[in-house]
Image 1 (cartoon, rainbow, N blue to C red):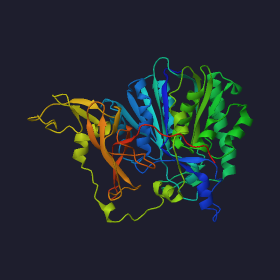
Image 2: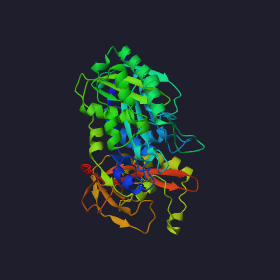
Image 3: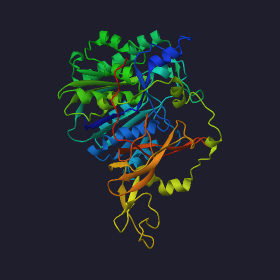
Image 4: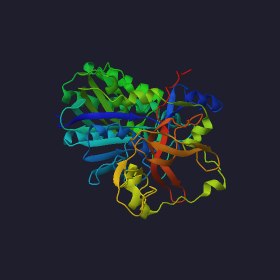
Length: 476
């Protein structure tokens, strides 16, 4: 049936994992601390749905250059600015690439994936989520931040689509209005009964029938659960015997919204053997169900993302990072960070793509100044483009500063030396504990550069992060 196959699928999670038992202890007086089991992924102040989707997409674009890019999210930082277009610039794709944003449903990514697989062209589908929720709600502790991306293209890949089906049903398990801004959830028992029997069941049965696969032959399922018990009810109804990877992801990182199906698919491909049948679903006002046959290995990125990170044990820091605890940072935070539209248009592609230049003397620099910084340069020169985002680099100098404002102190900055000779003054990110040492390797991460709180605008650039992330300790 499919005219294209999955070429590569990758997952990304932010560094921090909030330990839910901290919230249980902190909120014990109220009875709103949840079960206290597991952890949820927490994005840094300079991460959002777009930056995380870019990080996931970096793990798949090496498998082929897409002709179109789709960005899927229910928590996009803009409603009238193309996130897919910025993603294309960050990935240094051609300006003519077709860029589309899709939103308003947690199954936005699976719907886009079905269309891509049926279209036959090389297409990138990336999803990212950083959803807001009210402290004390189940969503604030159960939802996690993260992203995933899939590259689809003609010919053989790592998985092929055997069948897919869609059911539309306006089941309001949770909704977020444009006016309200925070989610409102329905009663769990109602959602459990209706989601399993009236939404998932017909979609799964139709997809299995189109694929010619029996429910018992599914090796791994990736089925987001709007509330606990939905998958168990579905298993009883249709004979599935496969484990649901979404339960493991929710326990270790949280429910990832539109990114959950693609992240689960990446994790399934990291573990499954060729020939295995996978059932992947997207849920939200209906359901998409897709049946795949594994034909090759995964990227390993989703498994690594679950394994690596740093435990967050401060409830107030969680509230700050999730935007639920506005603090008075004093006059130093009042700087006007307005971004010039003309500057962004003129230099945006170099900024978003982190494209430096090699001058006529062979030296690489960023940014491309009219006259090169080379000491013997005598005037303006033309540059050869040199992308820096994937070039190995190391720390030359670094400072942890508590005078410059940052929403998550301290502010780390310093010089970074790239292997191709470029030396750039950069901000650092993902530093927990002691600062990196001079000479330590770093890698580039696509992040928020600044937030203009007067005009509610944010700009993006790259920051240096430790090259390796530590493994998470076992849960206590």
